[in-house]
Length: 330
Image 1 (cartoon, rainbow, N blue to C red):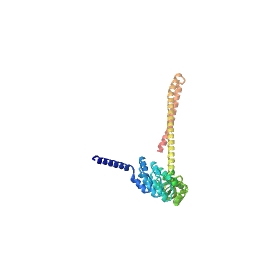
Image 2: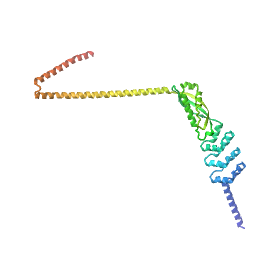
Image 3: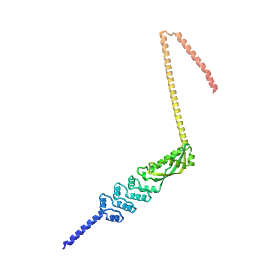
Image 4: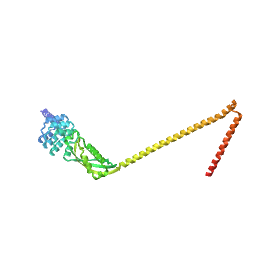
């Protein structure tokens, strides 16, 4: 009799532990919520999610939301999208928003957009309510050399069909900037750009810049046009300065060559003088040898000395008028 209560308590404790473990592993409360919400899901499927390390609430709650919105989505498809790395809740919200806006959006395409890294809900919202992309200040130069700063606002609408593989906002901004630069560059004067800024938007819009992108351009509005620098005059000034430096460099080169040539000529003159001095130094030796050999007589020698004396006297006499002339000038 004394062992009966102990055995009963043990059995009750084991039952409580088993039930607690079952309830902690199997989300019965979530299954009850799904059942009364009209979502057909088995407890075995919830257990399978647990075994696959999928949080059941991230699949069941979006499924309840979709069912209440009138969407017929399979639990297996939602779980597969979750296992692929997608955001199930955002996907369901996008499908509900597309249904309310009468936008044909299938589950497979929405899942592909989400897995491609794009916000599928934002894409649906932009399809319903177009967004405005503001470009930075774009520098363009007219043909008269005046720089113009242009800022534009581009109104776009998401194209659901081209969201997968289509280019994003940066491509739109780059293409619009390229179109503005081309249009302003083809203008004869910056004044025509200031007078008709809408001509820029018309020309750029006709180029079909949204091809290959995830957006459809609805309008391009020129928000601001400012006159900046005179690029043409600056380029001419820089060219003139460059030509001046080139001329100065060539003149310096010619001056250096002239100085070098002058130094060469001076060196040649000194060399010739050295040869003359060397030749003059050989004259006495030659005369001495001529006297010794008898080729030159004594009278010939004295006659030569007289000639040298006469020559020196004539030179000294010829220099006197030059000195007097210099004194008179002073």
